Amino acid sequence: MDRIFRYGSRQYKYDLERLDRKTFSLIVLPNLKIKLKAPIRATDEDIELFLKKKWIWLNKQINELKRYKKITHEREFVSGESVYYLGRQHMLKIERGKNEGIKVIPGAIILTTSKQIRDTNHNRSIYKKWYTEKCELVFKKELCAALKEYDIHIIPKLRIREMKSRWGSYQKGNIINLNPKLLQASKTMIHYVITHELCHIEHKNHDSDFFFLLESRIPDWRKIKDELELKFG
Image 1 (cartoon, rainbow, N blue to C red):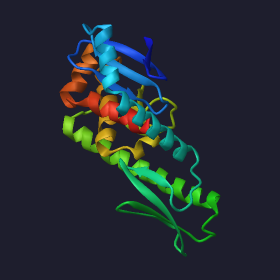
Image 2 (cartoon, helix red, strand yellow):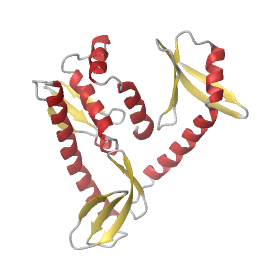
Image 3 (cartoon, helix red, strand yellow):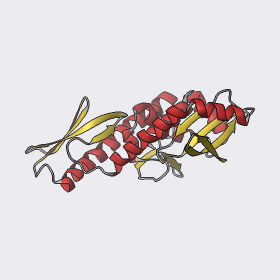
Image 4 (cartoon, rainbow, N blue to C red):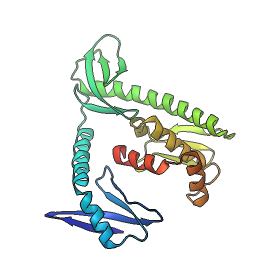
């Protein structure tokens, strides 16, 4: 349910969801949509007071996401750009060299090219090739770890597939699709998405049995999901 929150000269539209919970939860999605989860018995006055207390944090989150969105959309694959890999922020460094490839060191991703440093199209192709290979390697490793941890006997096939609004999906034929964008997130978040999809082996729909199973495997999955959506969605 969409609502309007006004504070001084500012006005924000937010989505309110009332749940059987004791506390409030406020998140700002990468598309700048604001979501508020509130206890069922919370009054309008309680909600308004909570939002006023969170105003400084809310404004900061919106500004940071606008800045991050701008960086992401304007990436040109030149030295100094910010990129995320496995939940950590790195600076992209472009160097000349005979052996093309990418090396990850603390705080930086070094891309070596045999062509001109500012040949952004070639830099992009090197990065994309490395990124695709890493998706296959990391996702397969995390899937195998999850299968061992929960003793699942049905071995699903793994596919890497770009999706606009999903991190993963489970389809007939025991196929798990993972969004390559997930490689930007931490291994904890990757583990959550894979576990979410594995739960669909037993429960196809998002019913109460599905969420009971998911929570038994990852008790704090809601917190992980919110962080994933907030930072990388």
